[in-house]
Figure (tube, one colour):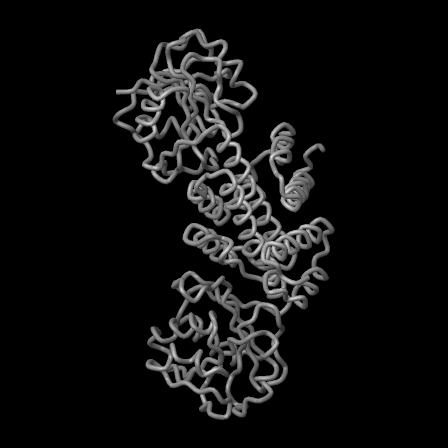
Length: 252
Length: 252
């Protein structure tokens, strides 16, 4: 049995809490959160605390807090023999604790949408082999998708995630607003959105690019640009069209 | 029983052919294609022809050909009493036939990837109510997702589809190339891609935007821009970040 406490009460903390609570190999000891109000959701199921000095000794502390708070909390934790693993995609492995680790679940979390951890990749890093082994055991208890990822690789993953998740979602929003403007239910696009995503997990996205840009359909491109009234959307259309054409060497 | 012939042998034609062949309410009469070689795939299962004058009379001709060829073929078809419905997202309802229709399946098709028509929205338009009713009957025989969409609305849908499918796929490709450059398996991002798409079908994308841009995390944004070596990708990052911040009124 691995003893674990979670520091944090946000989205990542909440979802990790749920996953660990269901794992038979994990004993969840405490949830720490600075603001006692945020801890109410956990209160009946696990011990909570809002002062770092009240944290008991465990095998692994999982730091699911804002990036800016990670180092400060590591410095303040008194249990120096425990593994302290943060969950951030963008900050490197800490050098401050005795046993440093990273436990980064690569997913977009909303508190209200339940997720199945079995499909979530966990990216691990540790300051030595022994620490890695324990983090890996913890990770495998909630997901089969466990990857050893260096700080440098994690930075690239985080950047890629901005493109394939945050920016993609903004393009969904643009599609949605174009539909609204013309009184078309956005629902009609759901199947296309899901299929496009599914395709990307079956084939290299580079190999399955479709649309006016890649086939250099100047007529459609001109019609689309004319139709777009928002200047920013026009700019986005033009830039992404150029980038697609540059990728495929389409004659401009 | 509705008698149908398909004109065209590309992706859309192939997938419609498969769907109609399985429908008990449709009798597929012929497949027309200019190039006999492209018809070989259909040859054993349905009658084929490569001359327009060899097409027999049916209730509905489905024109799954290139946009540029639609009007020319409508003009040349001798069976003027049949419904002639094109499958294009970007061209309006024709005025040339006696019975004009549109039968537009909103999906991204690849010949090798089977699709389940039950999830594909079919956008219909017709020059009168009677024609619409027959097209609707044909559509409902392969999918429950049938929508009445005007030419004007279809143009918006087509433009939206470029954003949520073609441009999204290009962002997937950018994510993939960033991963490759840093020797990270792109596979790690599959779950995130699928979840982001799934979320968009459950919530308004505007309501679930996450990432450095919307929370105005200048530190991450600066780190990301520094990390991007491709000038085009830098431009895309900057423009999409600006557009997200403009959408949410984030202080710049």
